[in-house]
Length: 79
Image (cartoon, rainbow, N blue to C red; front, side):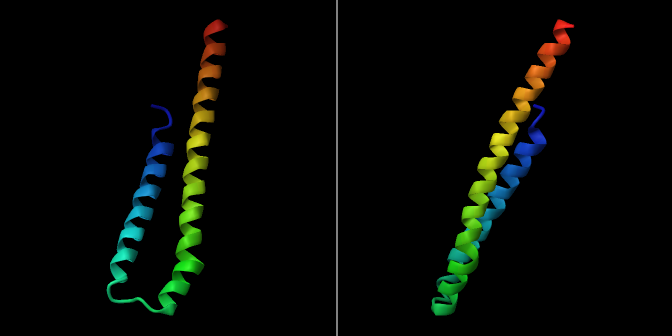
């Protein structure tokens, strides 16, 4: 699969984001004040949204790269 590295990077990003989210949830048991809430709102919530957007973008790029490879392959076979 030509896009294996692209998709592997997306998978790694997703895994790291999930790990961060899981670790963050653990902190709630011992840290539940206004500062935690503010940190979440200012840093983690935007990060989650950015990661989701990045993953969607990476998947779209992988699809475009697949199409380009198919188109180029088709052209070279017809020459």
